[in-house]
Length: 69
Image (cartoon, rainbow, N blue to C red; front, side, top):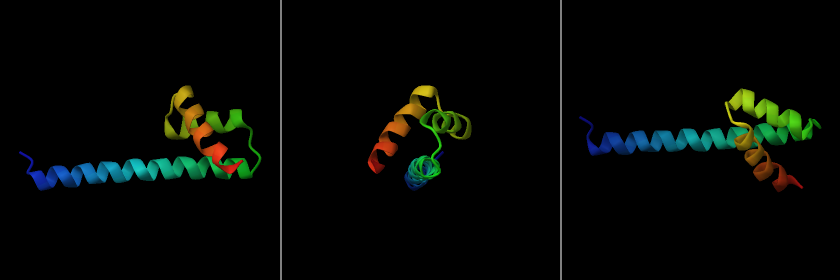
């Protein structure tokens, strides 16, 4: 049986992993844009490397690509 402190620790680790993943996706998109990779190719790569659906990959692209314009 988990104690409260173990549950809090586990939640923190999961939250940290998610934040790290988000940052990784953002850097991946920005790096590919810097290399003049097309939107379509970046979305394909996001799907493959981060195991995202088409819709998820497009949403991430829109969120992070538009911050650089």
